[in-house]
Image (cartoon, rainbow, N blue to C red):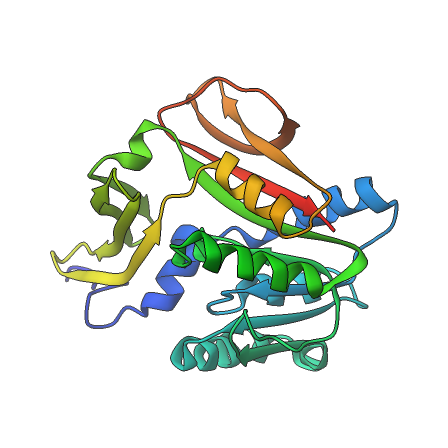
Length: 268
């Protein structure tokens, strides 16, 4: 009797598939901890994750040290509830140190945080410079005196192309689809699909309507928001596969690549 596929379009949970395909919370916790320690010579304890989705990073941050606290902010009530059940619900007593809130990042009234982060290019939802500036000003005001704001960004010629990228995962395939790009205003529309061994597909499981911001534009906006400095951490290359190796180092000058991902760290 043939084995039934582990995942199908009818049985798969899109949030679980997203976590498996896209996120690497252990690496992000390590990066945040490493850069903060290098900057301030001590361990960071408090994290605010903006556009937190399922709060997977919040969970791993709290699990990484018994004194760490995390708060995640997102406007989607469905994803917040999923994260409370499936991530915070796995923390046991440590759940007391983590919260996921349905809250606008522009209006957040949470206590000051040592680290505020916005990952997976989520802040690109702000397509006008005035909106992006307002967000950066709000984030800076919510940082502790010894704090840092961290976001990620992507670029390279491929970021402006219409393309589909596929990645095989255990039991399914992840498909990143850049559907539309307007070179005049840099608006970028993307989607994530999931394909399964039985031939079924979850089409447009997640959709994104962004502006493709450049590193220079973001850094200028951070400076205008009052941050004292910002630095780029560039991903290295695996010489065997010629793809990203997951190791990010501070750089001021690099060679452009077809596609690249970097972190940007700003200090108040």
